[in-house]
Length: 472
Picture 1 (spheres, rainbow, N blue to C red):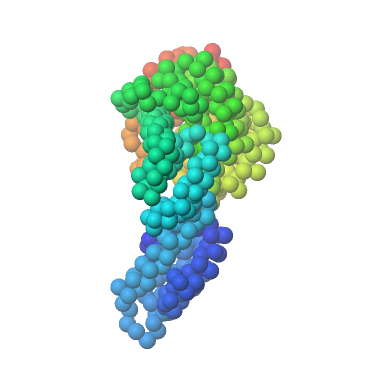
Picture 2 (picture 1 turned 90 degrees about the horizontal axis):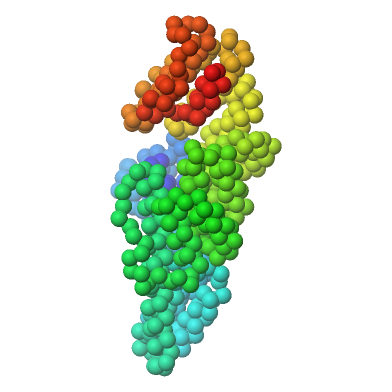
């Protein structure tokens, strides 16, 4: 029952939407079945987790029909009916939140019912509404195309000049939509090529005649694509500046796409100039916070939250990051909130050199996400090593945790073998450094730099390199 489609849909409602749905489903227009309402009354008590043992099909059926034998098909039919009402409710919510979409749908209804005068007026009103908005993005172009196309092909409108204008306008905006949307997809392909080494054959200069060069959104997207394919640092600076100054022209989707591309570029430049690009990435994240660009489905993206904590604390903005964690944790999705907050506090403590805090923070905590569990184990090992640097009694603690970590990684089924190797190499090198310092390794001044650089992949390679260099 807990994994049913109905329960999945109910969980997707936030508390206010859930309260409103109770009124919605009780409306006689939607619900005339007492059994259906009785089933919903039994279910709604278990929001938002719906994990009670009472949510057993046979128990629910007994609650509805105490004198009848369990009939699975009958119960499933009731659940399906509630699901359909819930889907109608989702549509209602969407229309309530998007006034333009509501008006546009109503205009198409006027056209279908041959209400010509009202259709003409409402179309003109919608075109005027579009011209008043700041965005000149793909959605703007597509909406204009649809309105002008429908206006042209509507048999009830006979003014020839207006029909020709709407035809040429429809064609112009269709070209604009195609060019901008095509470029957005090209940027995503280029992002994936940089991160996952995937090949693609996208060429932004195909269909040259379609390029709306006067459109600022298109020009910015083209600059971002060129940045991702050229790696020109000067283009990064100009694209970032144009992005910041054009935020009022970008819809949330385009702003998120461009911000993520700029962030990916910054992070990938860490190996060349970490100090500079850490600051660049942090400023971009701050812009994303201030402009609510980092929200996804009403929640702050968990990877963004963690990256802000890591980058900000590495830059030494300890007070700012502490305030950020306290302030923004309520915007995290509840299922991942405790993992993200715990890990963020550990990274803050590590960069503040409050190494003793990390074992205390992690001692009784069980991470739900395997990747966060790995991050926690590595930062715990690094914290013990930093304590070992000033107190050799921590040496055995480092080695113990490294050995336990290696066993954990080898057993971890969510990681492919090639993903396990960098973590195992990290542990191997760190143990050798500790053993050498404790005089348990029979080598005369081993060249750890050579070992580090000859592994195919090493987690926290930069941090390990700093440690090795500090001992030479």
